[in-house]
Structures are given as C-alpha cells and as structure tokens.
Amino acid sequence: MSPSPKTKVAPELEFGNAWEYAAAPESVKVEIADKYGMFINGAFVAPKSRRYMDSINPANEELLSKIAVANEDDVDRAVAAAKAAFPKWKKLKASERAKYLFRIARRLQERAREFSVLETLDGGKPIKESRDVDIPEAAKHFFYHAGWADKLDYAFPGRKGRPLGVCAQIIPWNFPLLMAAWKIAPALACGNTVVLKPAETTSLTALRLAEIFEEVGLPPGVVNIITGAGETGAALVAHKDVQKVAFTGSTPVGKAIAKQCAGSGKRLTLELGGKSPNIIFEDASLDQAVDGIVQGIFFNQGHVCCAGSRLFVQEGVMQEVLAKLEVRIQSLRVGDPMDKNTDLGAINSLGQLATIKRYIEAGDAEGATRHQSSAKLPKRGYYLPPTWFTGVQPSHTIAREEIFGPVLSVMSFRTPEEAISRANNTPYGLAAGIWTDKGSKIFDIASRLKAGVVWCNTYNRFDAASPFGGFKQSGFGREGGRQGLLSYLELV
Ligand code: NAI
Ligand code: MG
Image (spheres, rainbow, N blue to C red):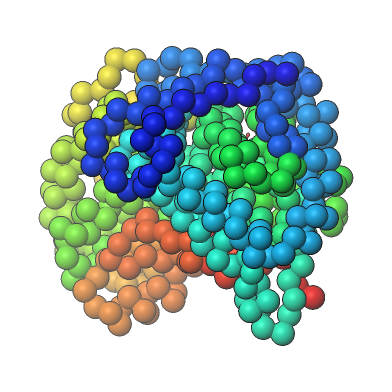
C-alpha cells in the first residue's frame, strides 16, 4: 500500500470561512506526497500494475509527484467497489445524499486556497483563475446539485427519475477540479456511484478531492478515483459493469469511445472540442468587445473547449478593433502562474505546446499573417506568447481545427447573413459570442447560430444552473442545470 497522501493545511484554513482569506497574500504551502495511489472503496491503495507516471509542473518542468497508472485489474477493482456501493447509495434518503454534497461543497470552500495553489502547480493556469474561477465554481457545482438531490421528483413532472448505476467519468486537463465537480456532483445527486479518471497531466486535485470524500465520511465506493492515461480510460469505458460513460476531451477520443459503447447498452454523453465564433458587429461597444475577445481566447491559455478562437469582425470596424486588440494583447502578462498578476500561465504539457506550435507553423505556411505579443517568456517551462493571425481564409487549417492554445484567427464579414453562414461553417457547435448594441439583432442571430451556448456581449460565463453542451461534433448531452440531470437518470 502506498501511504495515504498527507496534507498539512495552514491552521487558519482548517477552521473558519474561506472568503475571509481572499485578500491575504498567496502564502499557502501545499504538501504534495512523493507518490499517490488511487482512491478505491474509500481508501488510498497502491496500483496492482505497480506502475507510476510523473506529474510535473509545466511552469518550471519540475517533478511534483508520481501518480499511479491503473491497469485492467485496478479498473476492475474500482468498478467493483462502485457497483457494490450502488444499492445502498441509491436507497439512501435523498436528503441524506444531499447532506454529503453540501459537506463536500463546504469543505472545498474551506480548503479553497490549498486547492487553488495545487491546481496551478499541476496544470500551469494563472493562480488568479484557479482562485477566482476553478475552485469556487467547483464548490458551486456541489452546492447546486446538493439542492437537486431531494427535489428530483419535481424536476420532471409526471415522471420518476431512477439512477443508472456505475458511471465511468473521464475528464480532461484544462479545468481538472472543475470538470471533476461537473461530473461527480450530478451523478451523486441522482443516486449513482462513480469511477472517475482525471487526465494524466493533472490528477492531483482530483486525488485531493478524494481526501475531502474521506473527511466528510462519504460511504466507501460511492466515488472511486483511478489515474492513468488513455489505456486506463479505454479499459474503464470497456468494463461490463459500467452503465454510463461521461467523457470530456478531444473529438477523436470521443468518437473512439462512441464506437466502443455502440451496442453495449451503456448510456453516453460526450463533451468534445470546438472552434467557436466570436462575432463583433459595427454597432458594438468596441472596448467591451475587445475585452471579450481577449477573455474569449486567452483565458486559461486558450485551453478552453468553448474558446472564441474564430473572431469575425464587421468590415467597417476591422481596423479599429485590430488596433485596440493589439494594445490590449501587448499589455497581457505572461509567465509564472503563481504570480497573482499573471494573465497567461504555462501551456499544460510539452505535447500540447508542440501541437500549438504546429498550428502556428501551419498558419504561416498557408499564408496568414502572424502577430505575437512581445512579452518576455520565462526560460524554463512551457510558454507561448499570445498570438493572433490576420489574413485568415476559411479554408486555412487555423480557421478550421481546434488549436486549444492562445492563438486567435481573425476574419471579417460584411452582412449579418454572411456572419451567420461563416460562423456555422464548421463541424463543431459548442459555443458562440455576439457583440452588438441591438437587442433585436441578438435574438435573431442567436437563434440562427448552431451552438450549444451563445453569449451576448460577454464570453466564457458559466453557471451551474445553466446547461452546457454541444451540437454536431462538439458532442451530445448537457451538463449543468435541470437538463444536466437527464444524463444521470432514467425516466420512468
Ligand atoms: P484526450 O481526449 O486524449 O484526453 C482527454 C481524456 O481522455 C484524458 O483523461 C485521457 O487520458 C483520456 N483518454 C485518452 N484516450 C482515451 C481512450 N482511448 N479512451 C478513454 N479515455 C481516453 O485529449 P488530449 O490528447 O489531452 O488533447 C488533445 C486535444 O484534444 C487538444 O489539443 C484539444 O484540442 C482537445 N481537447 C479538448 C478538450 C475539451 O474540453 N473539449 C479537453 C482536452 C483536450
Ligand atoms: Mg501536471
């Protein structure tokens, strides 16, 4: 058995209200074990595979810890634990299930600073984003779904919702803890049990969430966390006792999982990639729009499935928008993610850095014009300057494929009709943004964009009560809101 990871929490975080510490300097020291086992049946256990992989800090390339790699036996052990826990968890009074979710949410708030630091160390995102978005939003998801647990009978009038059983949940590395919360909270609220696999570069906060499950006394087996890469994920999806698969990640892996599940009777939801349009009309408030463009593509280094990576600007304001955009991008601070002033942190992995660089090279080679911030980058670690391309044609690779990095493709349009047809000209359909002063235009355009989420005069806003999900190759099924419950219930 590998040692259960020890956490030393600053004493003031053990008791009291997390909000009181928001203004304090970032001084939390987070203890990270040398090695992590997996969380199965309520305890940390060593992998039967005996294999471990490195987890590094992408901001400085230093080793943070070693993480277990689950093989088929480990997967089997985790699924068996979830299966054994299901009948009791399902039968538990709904208000009791809710209490566990409330406790998890509360504990996440209390340990928020520790989780923020760990998220930033492991994944490279700016500490201000972990602190202000990832961790509080993860807690909100548990609060929100705690509220649903004993009200499911009212969610779908005339129907009864029954839990599905063991849910296999596979999540990506761009919002590690938040995606864990998006997956686990609704599954538990609806009475299911879970085996969750975080992404291989960012497993640490999910493993620490398991400590919270221990702290709040969640019954063993209700949530199991196994670690590993694609092979582990594939073994989990394939397991015969899994009733439901929920996946967030790349479109190719999503398609492979869909094939694997076809004919198996397993329920499936997929949240895949995107190439979302952000459309700026001449009548928009341009300063606000430029902020929205920057937020849309550079938030979390552009590692965002709904990133506004295709910018469409109406011709009459193109020059003005480009001028303002350049000033704004040049002011972005790129570098150490632990620095509270940093706007863009590290690219999540060496592999992702290489992928993004390949796309930038394709942009150059196919004839678009590259612009980059002159920000000075740290010598060690994986960094890229914020990048934008003008002179982009719809046929260019950088206008068609998901880059998942801080790279924006700028294009123009003349009429609203042209904006709509160009925006919809993509195999994806996850999100879109519209910037205009005219309310009527908002309603008209929004209703004609094929996208799961349409933001108007804002971008990248999320709420646990608001369903999220895609059309076309961006996947199917919704997460969040009342609609998100449907992914974890069978209606009878
Ligand atoms: P990926 O889709 O390979 O990884 C996502 C998760 O799936 C990870 O937990 C991974 O271990 C797991 N996985 C990989 N292969 C699997 C398989 N055959 N069966 C089951 N699980 C499997 O994404 P990757 O390689 O990290 O990133 C590649 C590209 O995917 C990115 O450049 C980006 O374009 C896109 N992506 C999109 C995300 C989104 O939120 N829509 C999130 C992450 C990546
Ligand atoms: Mg890492």
